[in-house]
Length: 328
Ligand code: UDP
Ligand code: MG
Image (cartoon, rainbow, N blue to C red; front, side):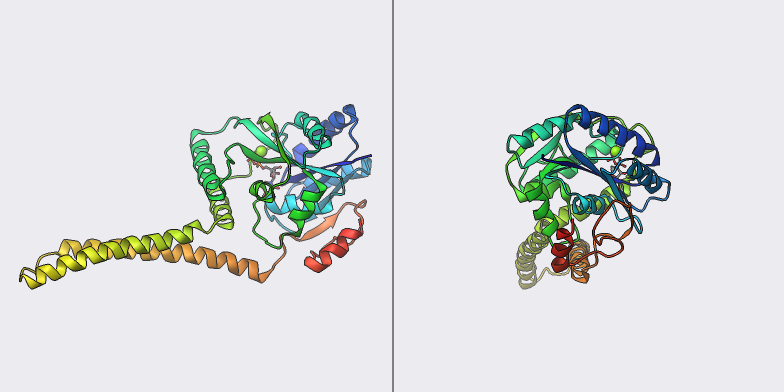
């Protein structure tokens, strides 16, 4: 019988683990879905992993791992995918903002042949106007960059094992899970859901972490900003030609002394363009640098006892990954 894995990244969610596990078990058992739960503690500083171990000791279908430090949600998702063994995998948040009631619907679509089921927000839930505006702008830009509408997409989705394998084979370290499933393609269906309110604890995102996340994701998916640099260069050259002609004409007609305002403006504008361009190029170089270093996406510190295979501590490079994969 087909098995569903539910992957849950959790960072300082001690108050949510027990409740989330209970809710999921209840729903999945009621629907008669064979399942396993994979909980990844993302270097939590509270009792999150202890809670995961407790749940795992009570039920062998619950497994988990703890990172050596906080590596971010993306890393948590990928570690969860790596540890999962099910024929289909659902990724969802630990705070139940992604309603588990939608999972049976996703499962049904999967059984009907869908390979990716995207959770689509029918509303964004309660958030500040500022946050909503920023998120709106970000998704507009992202949708433009990757030429797909992502405005109501989320990390809540079901993936067929085949898609999971594809994602795990990607060599890059800077991933953007939400967009990667669009990029990967496959037979995609959507399920609409209402974003729920977080019950316990609080959101892990600050404005600046969101900003960093947005920039990192936009640049990991597109080189358009780099092309913008070329564009700015062309604009500058265009103006230069016009001004060069004007200057020459003035010089030849003997009225060349004026024009300090122009000089100052030019220096400011061109200086600004150059700095901005360097910044953009620098950002990409930093990305390349990170990728070239080839550091792992995450480091696993501990796993629950029921995790088989050699995952503890080491992360595997491409060749080794396949080997490890066979151990499950
Ligand atoms: N999360 C994580 N690592 C982090 C930040 C968040 O694994 O560094 C997890 C978190 O535990 C939760 C999910 O990602 O399960 C979504 O986080 P949160 O609820 O804080 O974000 P929001 O819902 O406000 O977007
Ligand atoms: Mg949340």
